[in-house]
Amino acid sequence: MAVPSIDDRTRAVLEQVDAEETVELARALVRVPSVTGREGREISEFVRDWLRAADLDAGLQEVAPNRANVYARLPGATGGPRLLLNGHLDTKPFDHMTIDPLGAEIRDGRLYGRGAADMKSAVAACMIAMKAVARSGVPLHGMLLFGSEVGE
Image (cartoon, rainbow, N blue to C red; front, top):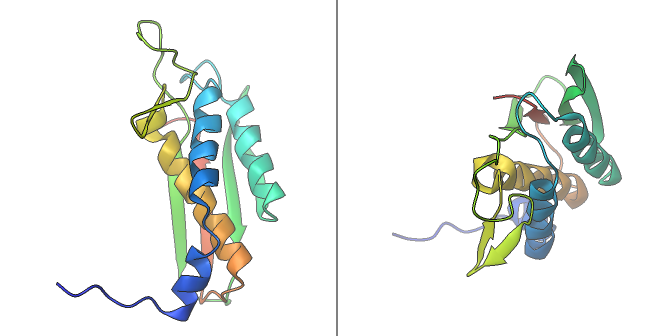
């Protein structure tokens, strides 16, 4: 199977992605406790603030006391399609874990900690993608949206 060529627009976006920054962002998200029903505000504010620091229009949607969803938007051409990058921030409790649930340790190229696979690493990838598209200067034919919920 032939590998498709990368066009200039895709290359411009990919050049903005820093693998080390992506891993460190995922680790930072794992370190913030966000057990379903117990915590939520701290991680939501962290995500919002990170997106704002990347010069994205980001905010919070209050859903319950101490719990808020996060949203961001990167506008493009009016009336074009919209693409939503989405993932949840809450985790299961970690009462019986045998590793440090908030340690965000890297072992053998893998990230360990509560929420690393479900789904803080994916949320970090979405955040990095938003930043990369914004920094690339590539014009969008529609709008790129980010959403992250404090509950599944």
